[in-house]
Length: 229
Image 1 (cartoon, rainbow, N blue to C red):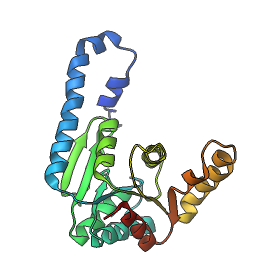
Image 2: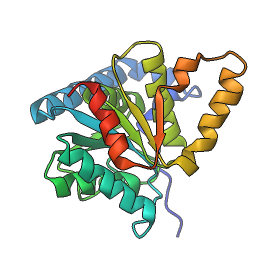
Image 3: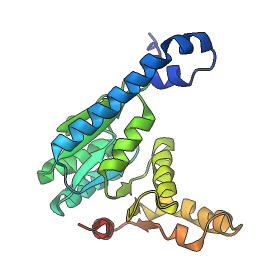
């Protein structure tokens, strides 16, 4: 029996087919969005995370794979360096980073998101928030992280990565190191940035240098320390 697809709050918000319904419920939706911001800020302020690193990566990363082990090791090394760890709270690479943080005894945060099919929060999260709206969740990531590490991932990881890069490039945030873990995985993207974007003058040389691409987790963690711990 196929699983019934759930309509999410984001889909309702962006739906252009039911304009009359939107007019009737607009104020209620704004209050719902406001409530998510308030809950997020209150919870994460009370958590006193200190310096925290956001870790992105694929929910599809298998538990028995090398990338999962890499994520666990990354979370552990970040924790041993004094960082709390924030992920999207899901399975795969996110679970791995939360697991490593839990092993290191630091605060392990999961910022979950409502999806058409339930994903759930992984068991290695000790501070949990569940969001209906992607944009509210992104604000929480950026507000409470002082740097980002991206493990191999898909569209969601790319979305979060380029959102962060754009904010750094436009100086909407200050010193904010970004590390891409996995030279083989990310190398082609960076080559394209240099050849196409930079080659055609769409970005500046310094913009490419905003990214550290490495296989060395110690190098990635040292790069995070540039956030000014």
